[in-house]
Amino acid sequence: MADGNLSATAQMQSRLTTFRQIGLPLLQALTDTAANRQAEGGAREAGPNTELFNALVDSTVTLSQKLAAKLGASEDQIDAWVRWALVGAASQVVAANFKSTGQPMAEDEADRLAAIAVDLQNRLKTPLLPASEAVPNTVATFRAKMMEAMVPVVGALAQYSFGRSEHALLAEVAEKLVKTADQVTRALAPAGSTPEQWRLLCWHVLRAAGQIYTESHYAEADRLLYMNPDERTAYFAQHGNVPPMTQVWQAFNQRMAMLATLATYLEVPSSVQPQMQEETWQ
Image 1 (cartoon, rainbow, N blue to C red):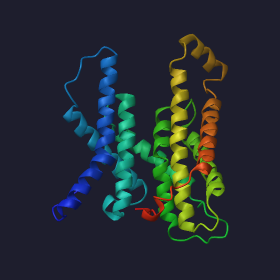
Image 2 (cartoon, helix red, strand yellow; image 1 turned 90 degrees about the vertical axis):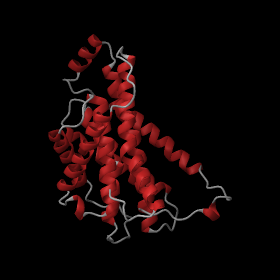
Image 3 (cartoon, rainbow, N blue to C red; image 1 turned 120 degrees about the horizontal axis):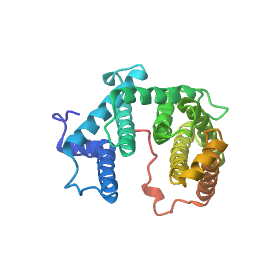
Image 4 (spheres, rainbow, N blue to C red; image 1 turned 45 degrees about the horizontal axis):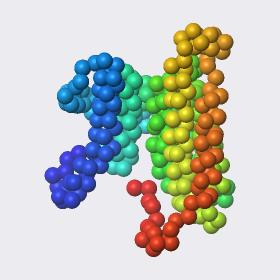
């Protein structure tokens, strides 16, 4: 991002945002992978590999461009905040891919993941709105935020799909998470909430649901990976090489129920309320 015309404060904010949304996930992936290699007996690395980091940045740019193209626009045709969301999402996926493969993402893999992400967008075309509300223009923003919340889920499914078609499993998971977010939001939304407040709450619930699902997904995948080889072979054979996801959904449902219950007990301290401002989408 060019920042020659920005004030010093704006330049600093821009650079911090770039580091937090793009650089940090990639650096974390580099350091985690190096630590894992060392734990497995590899040589200690002096520091992050600059050449490899630049390759991951290039992969992030490529994936964000693929996502924009799949959505029917070039990067210079979309709003700045959407572009930031796409690049931030791409950075997380590239980082997850590197942790899994140890390599920067190839262009054909970026194409494949972009197609998966857009298929998810197509699954979420029915807006989640209170029954009495007409569909406003801001639903498009809400849908984009829903896609952003589902990025960790897409990364998890791309790494391991439990012997199922990635697209079919994505449809199943997306439908479950959206319905869960809808139910939890309707239970938690205060009476008299505006449509904007309702959508904001629903987005936060969906983002939490996506994170909880992702953690449950990886936990079960790890359980299968570290299972005794003979037991794993017998287990997969028993289920026709399509291991059940019962434990994934049990863990997800339990944690979401705990989160929803916790939310009913949370009250904003009175000392904080006067300073609070209504949160926006930006």
